[in-house]
Image 1 (tube, rainbow, N blue to C red):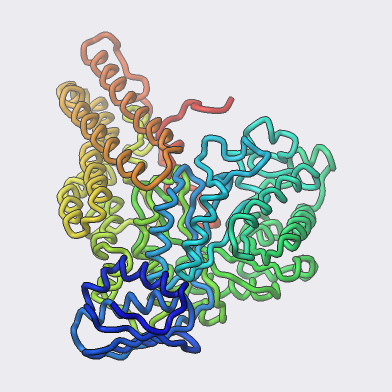
Image 2: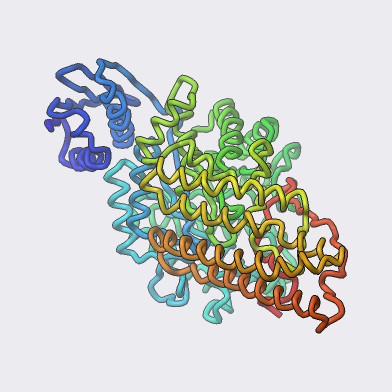
Length: 625
């Protein structure tokens, strides 16, 4: 293949894309001529020549993906695009057990570059090594400096700015639990402000990132520090205005960032929460001018919103942020943090509303997050449809149809778009009953205790059981449509098999006991529970195999404890039921208690429908005092 008009560095990038897409097999020996362009890119193809004009490295990569698609049609073409955003960013959570291997991150970078993303943030709370702090990231799979450099070099090759995304105030519980950090913990997972040891640690964090990653932008976190100033700080200093504590802390962290040449950004929520009684989405209250004036100049603020389901909230929140007089970055969500399966469809719908408000308010920077709350159980790859959709919204002028999305997804991700959307379906009660945003019955019915059934819902349990039974074959067939993701879809088929039997188990046990149906109780013990345990073993094996193929080993122990504990509860429940049926005991006390409604919480003013493992798997104390 002949390529003309590139620098050596650009050539290395192009050959990476050629190898990834097998482009040479598609266009043969037809030469490709490259040239500079002021903005966006343009591609042109005839029977004897291809031309690619590009303005940036990432526009070059996206252009090659689209050239590949059009070249397969064996027709002449002219096509051009320009991204509406200056920053099209992705955030990968590497802190909730699932720390992606370096090769996995590089694979993600390639996929995102083909889509047209030009920034990626690796969210690392304590999952990177810091010299002099051996307990920071201890047994957590933290990245070494060499690993960070390798990922940074590869990102730069593809035209992606790899940006550190760390925490310098809260969300540090996994590190701060060690005695080594006792003296500079305020409370819970929050660092102690106005403490010299705290700022020595923070400088070590920032210095580590400065030496390992070339970007001079950094996300310093500082979100959700709800109890700041109310722990050890309160004991040492008495009660102080908590907004002032954060502002003073922010200034010291900002000074460290400037020392290392950084332009920092931070999550914006704490400014709103502390001024509005803990509420972030306070759309009608203007920001306090005195607070605005104390935010360090040059500090970018990240407005994150993964929940709002109406355009008015987005519009008003962006207006409130614009009042703060600094650069605003919008952070949307690709939902994979509510359990064992993603929420692609709902995330895409929210994205449409958010993007419209971004355009209306001339916000030009996006950070599309993908958190891994409660154990990182669902892989980043499962929400690639959301990333693809945002990329197409940002780059294309025309509307996307399903066919276009399918072609683009096949090029960038190497999978079947419809099959990836089908990953959502395990949370649906039926083909016609789509789960609401964040609803995760596939998780809470899997982990619900058989005897202490906190859900015990006939409608939800039987609905998920029936639908899961249908999805067993669906996911097996989907594996054939996306062969490189065969292990992912086989794992989903295994989970479907478990849920087809387990989803309504607690309801069925309770119903049989209340109706004195000892025959059904024995069927449950002798037939149903052994089948669930066998299927659960199959799911465990498939899950572990998939986990170890893409993640470092640290963190899988949480999955083993959860599913292993479930196995034990299934076995002990069977023994207890048999004791009752055989007359060894006269009553099963836990089945005598009438079910109360499982009350859903509110998060940021919105009803929380997702349920974490610890909220449904047990009532008794598992950890703590």
